[in-house]
Length: 212
Length: 212
Ligand code: NI
Image (cartoon, rainbow over all chains, first blue to last red):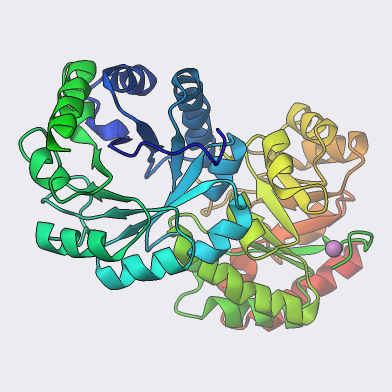
């Protein structure tokens, strides 16, 4: 995709194969996109490089078909290998300036942050967007720092790049998050672990539209 | 290092932090180089990307100081991040043609192979050298296929790129491996787990010289 195109971060799907309860990842991502997911981050925690690469090839076929941006978690080599639209890094991944050297100026780089200090530092270092959380308790990231809605509001007020809230967001609380004025909500189990991911995504999308 | 420079594969050290028995990795690598290791492959299996990157920065300082090539196992992003001399990939890592696209034409790419078929395929696909094994049983790679000295001799006769034998090689058997005419022997515990890595490397180097 072209870098001038503006990115819709509103319903940001983060994958986790452990939450699929037997469903196929690529099919589930396709259902999520058909339901309204606006961006997909492929996250693999224990996969071999070959397995991660092969998943990325499959998911890229889906995101490409629907012109939805694909972001790769952690691995700059996989982002390059499948020519993804971006890379998402956390505090345990490559330093941002090194990641930028590797993926070049065209790819989005998102950074996970949990404090205003980290957020301002990532913005200054050239992040394209921030993932802020964990907003609510979550089972998917055990070491996640927690960020209150008040802290989220403060960060949103002081940072100019797009902000995506993450952590335990689902249909019961997405309104409170979007009301802070963030650019998007990242969801994992609220789509992936649902029996009907298309319907789950569509409902979240509707709640987001109502919150704006 | 210059790409025209010919690489000395003869005593090829592969790292494994689990075998250090409390010794420091960078200090041990330095001792190994002072003892005669001609090339270092940094291999990390369970490290975070940040940890792997930081280890690579430290080891690059050592290999750079002594003008010994540094090869990164599996991770093309780490190889780019520290501007290593090469990348080593196995059958569970990126496909060779994708790895080449990512690291470019200048970096060495080595490929782990266990059969003549795999060796010829990797050579045809542009590998710069091959790691062949496991020659002897080893505790460091549980799923390693085994390759006999006779198979190693056959592969060496049919392949033109340099061949490094790997798997359970130590001071008691390195002579039998080098006698096959391979370009080098890769060692792990035969240097890393020894109380005096410099002396261990120097002795292996001597045995290699005698075998040629
Ligand atoms: Ni060179």
